[in-house]
Image (cartoon, rainbow, N blue to C red; front, side, top):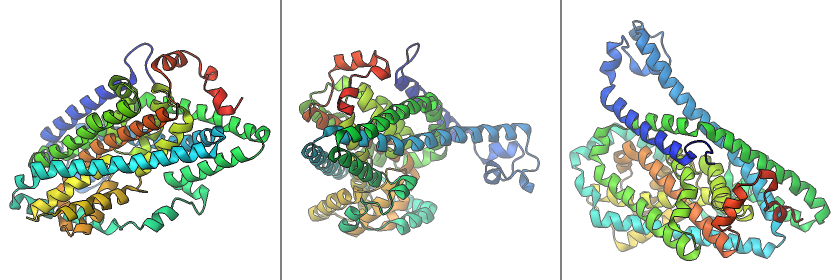
Length: 477
């Protein structure tokens, strides 16, 4: 995933990210309805949507046509890249997890890895919520927003908030567990239900360990070859990553608005400070003390996944790159990464859970409510349970927040206050989520002796893919 003749991928993505922020801010501050009007566009909304025949836009200039083309091209590049990632996500989980599970030849080892994975994920989620609550109680961001500003946001984003509230549904622990098992595995694949895909793939992998090895090896060899094919597809898709990151960021920053960001600056800073504490303080404690990894090695290896997670705001869409970073750059064996990471993309929502803790306290402060210790413990428990089985897609954190607020009786209309900055914070918390997935994967791999040394990683990367020394373990040769 590096570059032989130029900048490494993560530097290219970072450059695209920085340029995207700069261009997005420039558009937001210098381009408004009056700019469109000067180009002969009287109805900017319909013009951007492609309704060029509207009478108000009949006098649109050549420059206006060019501006709309550039905007549409920008959106096309971002959407194309996200489709490519989603196209890869399900196949790479199916192929690699079947190979990984079948190569263990030991069901007790599989259950041990699963127990560690889920246990650590739940612990880190609870820690994340606690960190968020701590920051929110100390800084009290709700005290920095006036009642007038609060009511203005409710009026502006009330309709969107109502839609989120209607979409929310309290989690039922029995349904959550039951929904792990797909009624139709092909339907789960088509819908991209990652937890069900993981279950089905794991079941096939386990079954392959229970049949005669001479029969199983044929199937394993096929899926192993397909894993390598998908890895190549990942590399092809990542060729446009820097440009797609630029396109995605420009679109989000241009629509955000500095006025909204300024009004909620303290709230945003509290969330970002909590996420940074998790990513750069709590997680390093895990991968250094429990995994034996150095700070530099870990973050250098996963940086492409972090940057892509920030740009896409989707753990599921980032999953192929996350797996590539952990397996190829960090040296984690596929039998571990193929199990730990897909589960993490679904149930490990540390950043989202932290954000919910801060948001709940923030909204309570807006309405002058004092949350008791019991209320805050309820938030921790509810947010942890809500994170299990929640899809790793953009905006899902807001639906989870409705469930958290209802659990302690905080006014749901307060959601409208934070909707304006939710997208940018969604990007930040997704990056934290992915970092947590990688940390847990590294810790579990280290405990199983399934992670390479830096020297082994360097030696392997110097070999052609078909000479990967890890193939022997996978195929049971």
